[in-house]
Each structure stands twice: as structure tokens, then as C-alpha cells.
Length: 378
Length: 124
Image (cartoon, rainbow over all chains, first blue to last red; front, side):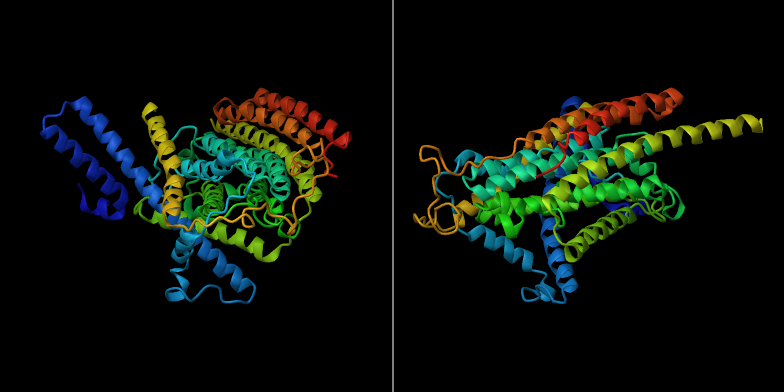
């Protein structure tokens, strides 16, 4: 193996090294080739899953810190700075606190539903991480239906929110859960339709192929630059995705001034911690998808020569998008529930429907012009 | 390709254990001192009032139009089943390809316009 290709792409290099080493070892030990292949596949799969599962909570913890720091700066405060240097150990302290807090289960709750809701909130988000391409060839699973899988996982959240509201035996939680369900299903439609625009432009649902289709010098191949459809689709996606995960300014399900804490009013301790985890993992996830389908994911200068740079580009773009969402939180007041539903159904849905048709007509026209020019030129 | 779905299965298994582990850890570490007051339903400090004594009182009546959104959602969600395969088939682009989708969308816009006209999209 070439030492330079290893240095330029260390993670994939390490993966290949372990896989080849393991195969050699098993074959040398006299295991039949078929069985070896199966065992190696299983072990490498476990390894990848473990890495992603360790990465996910670490990222979530530091997104919470980022949020507190950024929002504090916007509000002219300093933010957490006591635990560790610059407050860097604050998330760990938070985690320990979640662990040792008493778990209060009120009388009259539907116990299995109450317990299952936070678990179901976390599961689809973690599964979505299987699809994300963290760098060149660095997705855990390169599924050919990647984006469809992500959208399917995203819609499972409705169930968990409704279960939490329904099982809590509390008026606030019930109303919060009902509102959340209505909001999530309403904003799922513009989100799905906005994602269809990059799919049209790339001609593929596979996330890695959508990223591949955005190559081009200086990021000119990013779908965001396909004016006018790219920017509009991106902003619709950003708004709808923000609403989908109930973040400010669309955090009506947990509107503190009217519903206490919405669907997680009756949750405490680690169960509340799981909702918190799901919310921040979701923030990362929608930013990562947005960065991948509109801003080229790991595409960037010199990424063909030095694939390791792709990781930096991907995380850089993702963190910028997360900061945009935090900026929403710092700048915008919460909107009213009727405004929310009107905006979703009467503005975003017609816009996205028109956008898809326009993109298709434009693509067809563009291809016709290309064909015509080719024929004309000889 | 099947191998990839096996990996997704592995992920599903791991994703289920992922939230259960901290729950078990928290179960081991946390204090357990339930009192009656602590376990009462979150309210303004008094017992929940029963308007209909035989019924459990947390069940609030919710507007029936709420379900209209669910029905509309189903209409549009099924559309996606058609839009995504169509969007991937860009190699078969033709005038028919565009017009076909235009007709399909017109039907959907019809449904939306009907709901709009009937004021079903108003959250009162």
C-alpha cells in the first residue's frame, strides 16, 4: 500500500488495512473463504457501527455547548465557562447530572408508552447516521435509496412525540403532542418536495451520487448555485426542516408561555435527556443533509488529491448551517400556531410544487438546447 | 446490495440499544424517593378538576379539523411515491416527462385548492 494514499485518506486506509489484515489472518488459520468473507463483513460492520455510535453522542454534546455559547454571545452574555477550560467540560457535567437525577413518573401515566416514547425518539435519528457521508467514501452504508431512507426515518419522530403527549396523562402534554403531530406532518411535505429538487438535478436518490454530481471548481457545482431553483429549494428545506424538529421559531409544541414544556412536561431525568439528545442529533442531521444536498457535502478544493480534506469540508459546512439555526433562535420570536399552519400549507407547499415543475421543465429545455447545438455543430 | 441492507439491520439493532444503555445506567445511579406530592400530575398546584366525574379529566376535546390535516398529509405523502422515481428518471427526459408530472401536480393542486376554498386550512 502506498504510504501517501494512506496519509491523505487515513480513515478509509485504516479501514482497508484492518479488513485485509483480518481476511489474511482468517485465511491463514484455515477458515474457508466463504465463511471468512461473512465473518469479516460482520466484524467490519460492527466496527463501523461502534465508531458512529461513539461519534454521535460526542457531537451532540458539543452542539449543545456550541448552542449555549453562540446564543450567549448573541444575547451579550458569556455562556458556560466554569467547567473546564472555556467551559469545554460542561456537556460532560450535564450528562452526569442527567444520570443522577431522579426519574419522576407521575401517577396515571401510561407506563409503557411513557417509557417507549424517548427511546423511539432516538432510534430513527441514530439510524439516519448510517447514511450520512462524512467524507470521501466515508459513509457507513452507501444505500442506493439513501435520501428516501432519511426522509422515512425523519417521519418516525411524529410517533414518538405523539406517544409522549398521549402517555403523559397531562393536559399540557396532550395539547403539545397534538400540535406537534399536526406541525410535523404539515412541514414534512414541503421538506420532502424541496429535497426532490436536488434529486432531480442529480438524477439519483443515493446521497453519495448526489454529492458526486456537485463536483466543480470553487464549489460552482453546488446545487445551491442553480439559480433560481437551488436557493429557493434550500430555504424551503431549511425552514421546513427547522419546523420538523420543533426548533425556534417553530417551537410551538413546547411553547413555554402557554404549554409549560409541551409533550415532555412530565419527563425528567434520563428520559428527558433522551429527548434532548434526539433534538440535538436531529439538528446535526438536518444540517448535515442540507450541507450534503445543497452545498456539496465533502466537495471542495483539492479533495481529489487529498481525500482527508473532505471531512473538514463536510463538518465545516454542517457547523455553519447549525450556526444559522442558532441564529434563528437568537433573532426570531416564536410564531403563532395559525400563522404556522398557514405558512406551511398556503405558502411552502404551492412554492415547492411549482419549483419541481419548473426544475423539470428547465432541465428538459436545457437538454433540448444542448442536443440542438450538438446537431447544429455537425 | 443486500449486504448493505444487512448493515442497516445491524444499525437498527445498535440504534435500539443506544438509548437503552443510558436508561439502565441512570436506573443504577439515580435516587428513588417517590412521594405522593411529587408524583402528582403537573398542574397549577391543585388537583385536576373533573368536569365529568366519571371520565378521566385530562382528556381535552380537540378540534375535529385537526384530522383534515392528517388526510391532506396522506394525499401529499403518497404523491412522493410517484415524484421520487419520476425525479430519478432524468435520462428519459422528454416533453411527455414534464407534462405527465404537470397533470399529476394539477390534480394535487386541485385537492389543495379545494381544502383552501373550504377554509379547512384555517387553524382557529
